[in-house]
Amino acid sequence: MGIFDFISKQFIDVIDWTEDSPGVLAFRYPMRDREIQSGAKLVVTETQSAMFVNEGKVADVFAAGTHTLTTNTLPILTNLQNWDKAFQSPFKSDVFFFSHREQTDQKWGTTQPITVRDPELGALRIRAHGVYSYKISDERAFWTKLSGTQEIYTVDSAAGQIRAAVLTAVSSFLASSKVPFIDMAASQTEFSESLKQSVAPGLANYGLELCSFFVQSLSLPEELEKHLDRAASMKAVGDLRNYTQFQAADSLTQSGDGSSAQAGVGLGAGLAMGQMMAQSLASQGAPATKEEDPLLMIERLGDLLKKGLITQDEFDKKKAALLGKI
Image 1 (cartoon, rainbow, N blue to C red):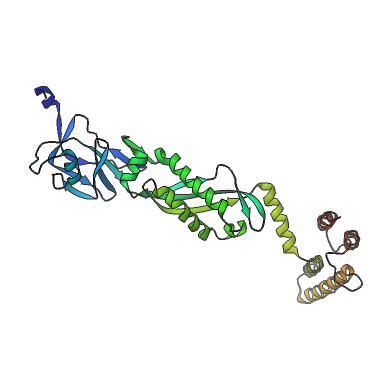
Image 2 (image 1 turned 30 degrees about the horizontal axis):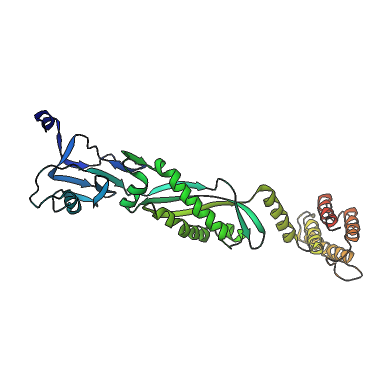
């Protein structure tokens, strides 16, 4: 090495990463034309770790603390370089810092509906969205499979690969899950935890720990949601006789001026009217059944409509449902 090369070369006494900015996962310490002196200080903060790489091979990893770099504190790197115990000369190695902060509010969502076989509703196309958080847990795996030799590696740099791993795990879980969609939506806390267990191994492969995983929404195609709403409404209404009896009693009870006497009269009239409607809907004193003629049921509904006991909208909806059975 010439005298001018020696003069231009700089020797590093302190290695640290002071600009640990939010969203930065890995940082390569600038080493161009610089060598590390034996006895130099490596400063690693509580939210960081540092890794030495020699000729493309991972050597030593340091946790938080202040480390004096000698052959005793760099055993693997020393072995790679074939240094003896009396080594005192400067050395060259790439140094990478990693942030171990939890990266929160990372969003995930299915780009396309996932087709699942629901045990109750049959084939369904489900969309799901939510948030998750992660942090680096294995520097070697993260550096080898994601960040590599880049000077700065950020959350945005890793987003595509991580999102792909998340969605692959979510799709596989939903496609193989035998949990009914209604139970998924009703118990999102338990469902989120189940999904977390499924997603975590995919991130661990990249040296990442999945800290949290939440499902914020589960949805079906709009036309199917409308169908389920109608089915739920009919189930909530139940038997037509009970529904019309309740409607009549409720409307008559609320028709008075609020006095207790009138309220009592209204309630009594409502119950009597409800009994009349129940008798009108019965066939020769027997309760109406699913096997009754839909046309006969429509005629009876028409009588109730003429008497003002049900609304036109109620009549139209029930009529359409009965015609659908013909």
